[in-house]
Amino acid sequence: MLIKLKNYFLVLLSLSIFLAGCSGGEDTPETNEANPNDNSLKSLSFNKTDNPGLTMNCGAAQNDNIFYVTLPEGVDLTKVVPSFIIADEATATINGKSAESGKTVSDFSNTTKIVITSKSGLSRTYTVLAKNGNTRIDNMVYSFMIKHKAPAVSLALSKDESLVYKAAYGFADVAKEERVTSDYMFRLASMSKQHTAIAIMKLYEEGKLDLEDRVFGKDAILGEMLGDDIRDSRARYITVRQLLNHTSGYSVDCIFGGLSRYSGKSLKERMLYMLANESLANEPGTVHKYNNFGFSALGLVVEAVSGKDFETYLKEDIYSKSEDPITNIRGGKNDHSDRFANEVSYYAQGGKDAYGNNVEVGIAAGGIIASAPDLMKLMSMVDYAPRVPDLLKSATLDEMYEPSSVNNRYALGWRVNYPYITSWEAYHGGTLAGVCPIWARSDDNVNGVILCNTRSYDMDIDDDLWEMLEDMQDMF
Image (cartoon, rainbow, N blue to C red; front, side):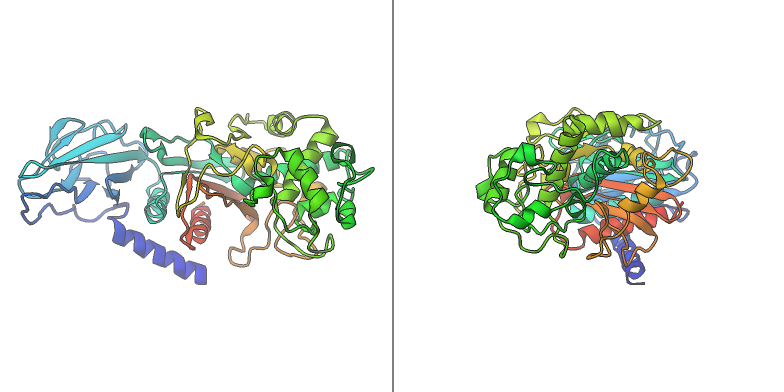
């Protein structure tokens, strides 16, 4: 009930921010008080009386100098008539051509520039990002983007393992005004852990390792790779399962913890240093402590057991098994200059550095990048549903989704038993500067993912994102 009440509040908030979505109401009035220096674009809409292809009026969402707007599928964006409110005696151009509200046919199929010039000659440029799509879903996203200052969002939703909606919004690169598309990849942060968990469970199902196998020390999985120099002898008894469910006993995060003693070290060097110098905070298997160290170690486990580089194993033994080819999931790079052609840029808030985390070192814990549609393809391979063959047997999936004995809300790499969104069977988000994602598998085979290339430090951002995904899933 609390979540639904909050959802209603968010809807009201979005309505107060902009003329939300499409409706069958009256056209937007076009009157304004005179101001000789006023060069503002006060509102933008596409009205059914001016556009024969529209059956309702569609208002744009304003985010400072950017307007977002969705028109229903089938509407030709190259030939639409906008209505707008500007000051008396101000003038407007659209893509360099003089425009009159409610009369001028214009092309909004690409990034559109509207320039408003006041009576006194002052000009201001606005950017309009128009698209076709589901106006109800898209307006939820616009509200989220405005509230949390998100440059780009991408989402995908599937029903019974078939994609029912995908969409991308905003700029992949703000400075270049590079529009994002559904093929663009975003950093997943801790949503990388589910990929690692799937890889481990596949090796487990194939009999190449056991979940109770020891990981560190002599005669353990990583014994040959990392040796036996271990400060806390209890670490020799940490198992694969305990790394998967965050009950290793270690509390130090040598991957994304920002500790200077790990700065500049490779993954192997970090592991060697941690084993030789850090003590456990708890007995293995007794306390849940979320830790990126464990999943980074599991990436090394995959390499030791399979004989393949971690990313190569994912590509050849996981992603390639999809009937619908997965091409836009891979390991990310640390620096903006090294980003892939179809990867978004990341924008930190609150004084953080979006490129301050070594995602290459932490690939198995938080360094994978992916497109939203391809994540839905992967989800369909581990969701029990019959249309797409699962990568793992049902018994193995049961094991992966079984809650830990010390934390009923965390399984093997997946969060479970969310007390508020009870329809979610398994889910996970991710937290790194410049990143805010969520994906979830629901009990009625409606799965979804939302990716975002920023992270605000408004405490509501994750709740807003998760509740938005739930509301979208409820529509199918």
